[in-house]
Amino acid sequence: KQEVTQIPAALSVPEGENLVLNCSFTDSAIYNLQWFRQDPGKGLTSLLLIQSSQREQTSGRLNASLDKSSGRSTLYIAASQPGDSATYLCAAMEYVNKLVFGAGTILRVKS
Amino acid sequence: DGGITQSPKYLFRKEGQNVTLSCEQNLNHDAMYWYRQDPGQGLRLIYYSQIVNDFQKGDIAEGYSVSREKKESFPLTVTSAQKNPTAFYLCASSGRTAHNNQPQHFGDGTRLSIL
Image 1 (cartoon, rainbow over the protein chains, first blue to last red):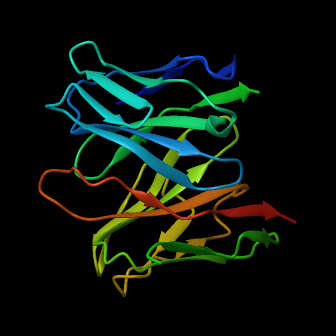
Image 2 (image 1 turned 135 degrees about the vertical axis):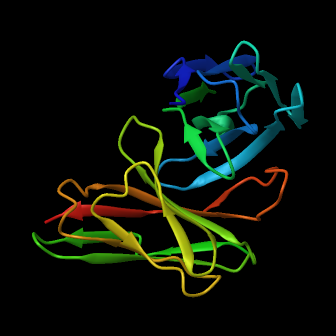
């Protein structure tokens, strides 16, 4: 059974710092790996989707990498801003459109 | 604007009562999903539907039921058999492709509590 783990559970950094969020999964037979952002009391917003054949994806200050063989993905946020404060969730797609989520990393960027 | 609308935002259930959560999308997506989120935990899949008039159980379907009579609508009923219904419920949709490269789009959720 696929299990997804995110480390750390919470992170507090000063504004402007570069940071890395980690995601690991137990079964490497995935179709893709997705990163989402969730603001308090809200739904999820898709940030990046990495296909199983890809190594990384970039969008603005965000860069996500995928290493299927080791069961790991990282989300890199450059030059963090207070507006980046949110919960970040990763999810592995097991088979057609079925996502398995991690518990998330709560990020606080202090101004 | 295209998107997913969930209603109500807050819902209270009495003992022994069934309640229905609404989810409507105007993204023309084939696939729709219902997730449950508990504090400090990731999302868990309740039910999903790849196409109209068809749906499958997810990991925690017991005590829940769904229907998919229209492409844009996927209501979730929380029955009295669900003994611990207090949670944040999220609906999502995605385009159905052979390459699984479509991200899921989420609504803003319904928070269900027991009276």
